[in-house]
Length: 216
Image (cartoon, rainbow, N blue to C red; front, side, top):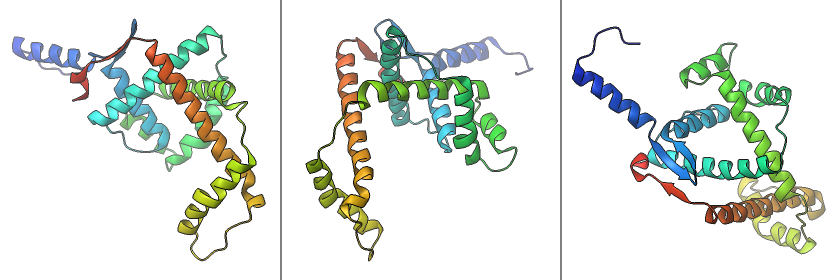
């Protein structure tokens, strides 16, 4: 905290800054996403991925889109009373996949401080993410089917091209050796498409408004 006294003009400047930080970014019906929520999303996702946060307008827009989808999914999960993952599983996820991204015993605590994020905030972030992914798997992934024609078409087209680009001079594996891998890719894409269609429909049913000044 600052220790010096502020003049009236400085005080107004400080108050104006606070208003900017907490100004409304997006409204989803009667729900509000503030600019500080976007900044928190950027910090947390960057910490989870092991990269530096990006607070550019494009990054804020991407964070807003993520939070809109998450808000719509949250409503659906709450309506169906979909359970949250156990905190033990959340802590295991952090210990196994996030902490190793930061070298040394002090690496992870230092990363938390550098991004002005608490471990509890990161735990809640991961818990929401795990709940969403579990719900997406149940709602959109299960029941997806892949035909042999789809597998062969992917193998002869995209798989072959990617393999030759990354493994120059090496023989392409037989189709039967990579069938499960290809099927997983196709199922993942179908799941993503089903989710995108659902979010698009949910957005049409909701009144979503962006405050353009936040994203400039």
